[in-house]
Image (cartoon, rainbow over all chains, first blue to last red):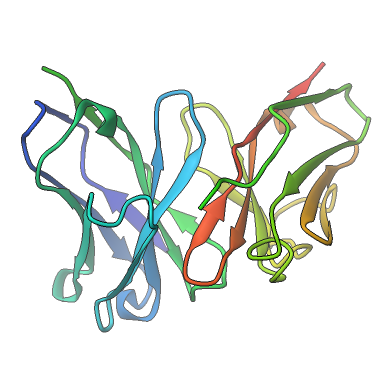
Length: 119
Length: 109
């Protein structure tokens, strides 16, 4: 069974760093792209970027380029989304999702990680 | 890049049909047959309902159908059921990235 299991909810202060994770199982982790999607409170889905764990090829949305870093450790089938300095506006639910290629849809999703940034 | 344009809300009675539109540009919706639709219930992760404009994943009822004309894609839900009440998002490949629509809240009256 394909599963994407994300790390738990986080509460951070502005300026702090954070790295959240997404662990894949039940499929060949290095053969599928993992994407990250933001959903701010009460708002829609936003595509942030994707990574191909097989060779770490990474693509970012222009809106998120330079704001976050996407990485993966294929030895433990885990993808990451990280911030070096959080802002209150980073408060959101973050989902990871899998797709076979840049043009295929996200077919499996993680359960989401809620990130709250507040002083 | 701008989000694809969807109506904020649509509604219909059980058994009726509703259509949700998704308008983009020739750089996304109009340029590729890679439009997908996701259903999201409150507090849940999105679920893939339609991909490649009109294909249904296994397990998705055939009441859900998709189409595209020019820069506008559409999701039609026929025979509305109470459990169809949810938010729906379109999504399109746009060359070097992917873009979502703003989302449409479907209310089943």
